[in-house]
Image 1 (cartoon, rainbow, N blue to C red):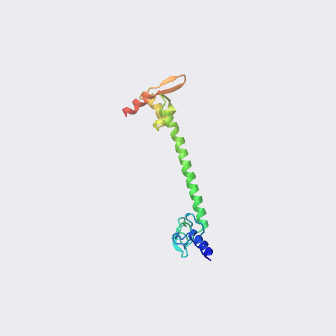
Image 2: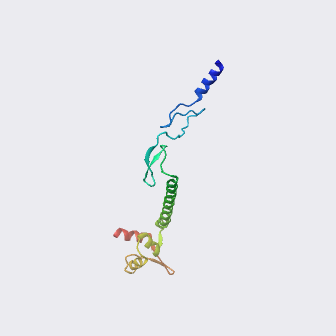
Image 3: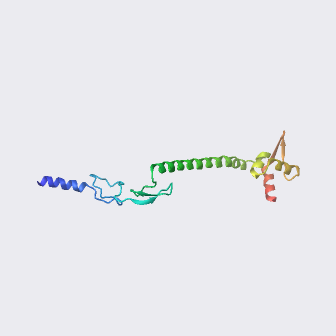
Length: 155
């Protein structure tokens, strides 16, 4: 009789008697301390994160009123991630040429217009009115970085 009671006491010591949130006590044998979410006996009202409707939740971690709202929220989150990625890609693609141009000593008319944010024709008008000097190599007109810096310092 004492052996049976000793084994019952050993089993009793192996059980977990901690409270997990508002759930009933956990009687799982050899529970290693990990948190298990169990449903509450008493559901409480929450508001759905996606559709903003009130619903009764049985777990404190519940965010959505239904599987449908959860799926729609997941899809919307994925859509927003794709938009952010595409915006970052577009921004990187637009700024990369400007960064490369800033390091060059000799620039073409188109590159100067891109750097200054003006049209190619405006740069040509500046050349024709002698506001900026150019170098002609063959049929190409090139502008030195020094000339561009002088132009920016005067304005």
